[in-house]
Length: 214
Image (cartoon, one colour):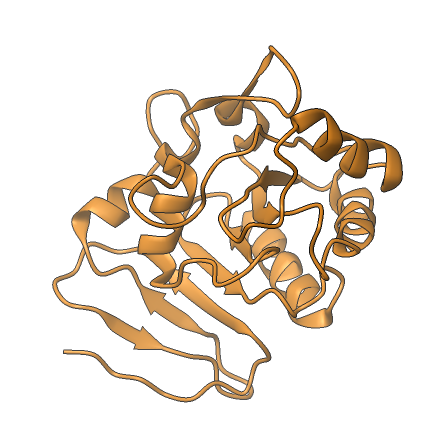
């Protein structure tokens, strides 16, 4: 059985992980915490901490953008609030890189990290990773970890986006969709592309998730 309430919080749904049968979705009302109980044991397992000390959803090594080296997502995310965002270099939202970098600089010393995933799922990414890297690192001065270009939708999506889409019951509908995951995996939030990285609806969630760790 599903329960749905319209949200008054712009572009955001929050999730509290739990192994239950059937989806129960509660969206934020003014003055109330937002909740989305993850509906399956499989999804719940992805947001549990494993023997390596990180959430299973991030227990992967993925090649870095325009690099032969890999990012150890477990080490990057362990005990941290994590934002995951799918990016594109030829999109109307590409300018959000500036806001993402500003957000990263604001919170990076407070157990927060951003993971960027370039994707051509919406046909707006360069075929050459060198060109993608130039946009990210040269044009916008991105310093947070960026992965190699991968799909973020459907059965061929990279494993991180498969797990997040299942948990939030919302896959990216466009470039620059944003997920935020609490350090202990108990909560997941999902923001549509038009919500800018420094919007208060995002920073408020980050602050809440960081406060929960204290």
